Length: 215
Picture 1 (tube, helix red, strand yellow):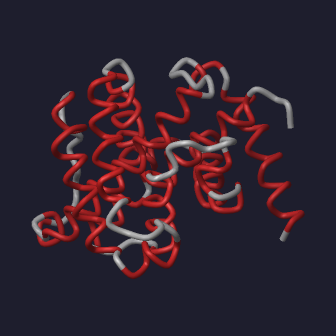
Picture 2 (tube, helix red, strand yellow; picture 1 turned 60 degrees about the vertical axis):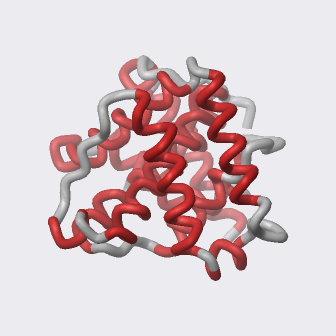
């Protein structure tokens, strides 16, 4: 697909997919494990050949594509919380991309974590999920969060005060930021969410058709 919205839709679906984990964790203490692990893996994909490579193929962002399609087509009053996290992430990332020193610090920390494992793949992430959650959450807290006003996460106190749930929320935010960086890199902009919705929506449908044809 040569449509300019192809890559934009993929990256934005990645943002949405990671963002969806935040209210799950904040309100229940748990989240979709497959999507969570995919979000972690995307953080370590720092030199992808294509947009889809960040997610190991578009099939792995189907949930995000469906959620993004709903956001663009339905009454957004029912999606206020998700939209707030989404735009909060895009705002943080916009500031992050203006600070090369901070980006280099994140890259160094990710390399330090990667060096602890023979390879960061599905099996490694699955086995070391809690350890990786704490490590990535620390990067978010130490480097990303101080850049701007913190995103206020709303949920149940029993989960918001749980250390592992907190770590997973921050890791999900980090995953959202990673996809947001990709979104900006492939030409995404806030104005497109107002004036380019039809192009994004059509690209989503084509991507979903592509996924369904393979399945």
